[in-house]
Amino acid sequence: MSTLTDVPRAEFLEVATEPEQPRRRRIKRKTVNTIIWFVVLLALTAVVLYPLVWLVFSTFKPSSEFGQNPGLIPENPTIDNYLKVVEGIGGTPLWRFFANSLFIAVMAVIGTVFSASLAAYAFARIRFKGVGVLFAAMIGTLLLPFHVIIIPQYILFNKLELVDTYVPLILPKFLATEAFFVFLIVQFIRNIPRDMDEAARIDGAGHGRIFFSIILPLIKPALITSAIFSFIWTWNDFLGPLLYVNSPEKYPLPIALRLYNDATSTSDYGATVAVSFLALLPILIFFIVFQRFLVDGVATQGLKG
Image 1 (cartoon, rainbow, N blue to C red):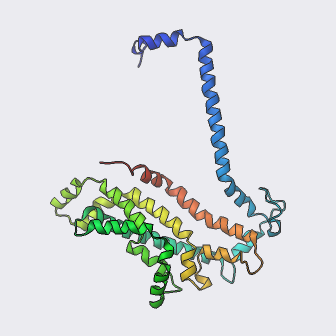
Image 2: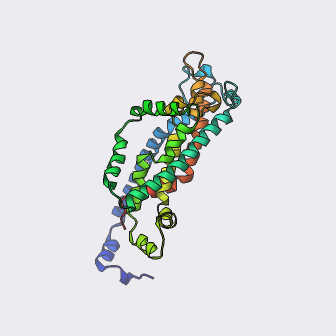
Image 3: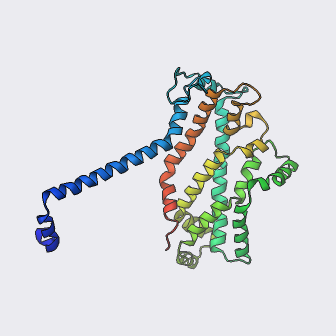
């Protein structure tokens, strides 16, 4: 337990002899600064969240009110938008679109995490001829826009008669084609001391045992970070399903959402907004559940040892 003797003499004398009025002014000034920062941050938060709040309230606006009432609160609130959305469109219920998107996103996450981690382990731990050239070529693919490879990919899958299936959307995920995730996991593995691998080899462990028993548990933040981004990107993907999926009953949510807002016919803006909000919910839930791991993954990027 600290006593007065533990406090340096000069500091004790300064606190003891400080006038009451200046001390109160200093405390008041700190309180005012705190309140100002709180108000500024609250205002910035309101600006950032306003589009989401507007989206939520707009789901209760009738379609006729869009364009006439740009405000936040609907004049004639209704739940008809949700009733229309639940019924589906074109004879296909909404849950089918959700199921299609969920299946594609989950398979993409599994494929990305598994293949990217294997490729990253090979680049980070296995010495083979041309590893530097192959790693540089993989990083170079990050500079290629997706639109450059659309036509060759489509011709390939069309000749394999895989168009109007989910294979073109899922198969590349199992082949470590996402260079960003491979690079992310490589950086994590390189931060793991090689002494652990050598100790495991002395005990007779091979690459498979080292990868599954040592490396995978230590790179969990990187794996979860990759899973989060892969899920979000796949869930929001519009161009891929638009190219390869032709049957309405196989449409994921981004394509189904477009059906509610067709330029060639009457657009149901109320249903469009309601579907947009419902499509956003899984991403919010997924992010909220795994955000702690995402922060851990980003925070450990610059650490060594």
